[in-house]
Amino acid sequence: MKKFNDPRFEFDDLMLLSTPHLIKRYNRALEQLCGKKTNLDSFHIDCSGFSPEIAEEFNDDDYMDTHGINKQFIIVSISQKSLRSFRSHFSSSVEILKQFMLDNYDALLTLSALDVVYGELDNDIYRVDKIDDIINADKIDIKIDTSQGLIEKAKELNNLIEKLNKSENEKWLLEESFLPIVRLAEKTGNVQHNQIIPEITHYEKKYYYSKHFGGVYVFHQLPEGKTTLITMDPKFNPIALPDKIKHIPGSDARSVHHFLHSHGFITDLESSELILQKNSLKEERYLLTMDYMAMKHGQSPDDTDFYSMKKFINSNLDELPKMFHKLYGLVTAINREQKHLKEDDTIFYTCKVSEKAPGSEHVALINHLMTHYTPYSYLRMFSFNRELFMERYSVWSSPQKEHVKNYLSQHNEIIKEMKKYVN
Image (cartoon, rainbow, N blue to C red; front, side, top):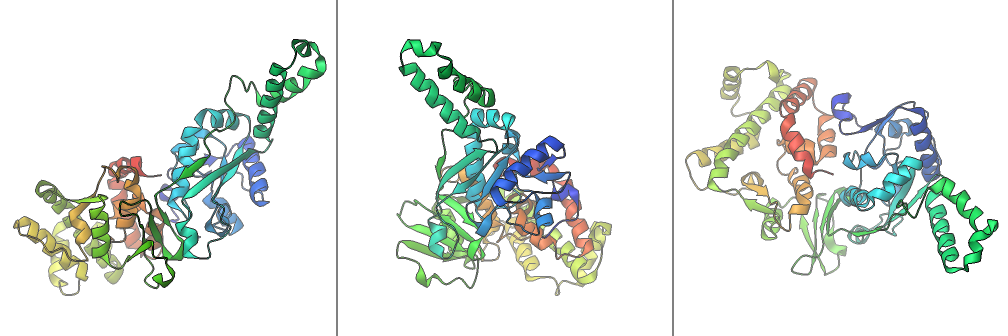
């Protein structure tokens, strides 16, 4: 399992479980879901109850996500709804789980106060074997239970009360009529007063990302009536796709940009915004150079001042990556108010994610997609595509890691602002 080896980054936005009674509850649910228990006396969980420490203990990153489908969850506290997702094969899983918690807040608040809640997001697919399984993963039914079977008991209690209400008045006087009700109520509480059974359990998602097949972005219910797939694996073979599916290879940045732009997911930056973007482009160029210094020359970028950096650039101009020169050309064009060329390498640097329909509900997804085309936008990648960030971070040199951690720490307020869009 790939890790940061730094708790500031590995466990931010996660909940620490360290009290014996909560760990006991968690283990009861875990045993029901996957037949295992943790021996840890403290660990962190994300919004779904997934723990990176338990994954390491079990040597199984998918201990709550068998075959990467039908994600399971454990709710020990309703406050988990404000946590981020540490790991998921589908972006829609977390979005739906959080919406489920919001839609059924009162019931889950009551249930989690009495017992641990667990379940799974069931889309009637047992394993992803073909691309059709990804395309048809847009409908989810949430199955839920507690370790003490409180939901079934609540349903049974409701049925007994309903039958008794419809019966003759004299039955209320008979001990055998109300004793079963009292016994159940001792476990469930007053189900007439407190909502305990979740009522909204079916969800659909139009747009989502799946890690399967090297990364697939799915866009359903578009105006033209076709589902569109954007695939990130250059080896993906679209030959088996049905006619109703439009395919865009992720390597074709221009076509991806056109699709997102034409459907209102992204918009071009206005002139005034381009001036502001110029500073961001300079910063990314600066980060790119720092990365190059750390990776190729083993230098610690944080010990480098502006003049040393300028001298390094002048001395190594021809060696610097192609992207440095692309960003330099883009900044120059903006400075001179020239019409800049929309080259594949920089096409996503002069646009922004739209917060208007249809993009307002999908800001995180589109930013997740754009991280593939803005590799030095560390703030975007760290906030919206944490797994890709961690994957790249794991192979960086020590100076490079230290530099990026410092950079993120310096921009913590921006990261906090981005969190409002992240699930």
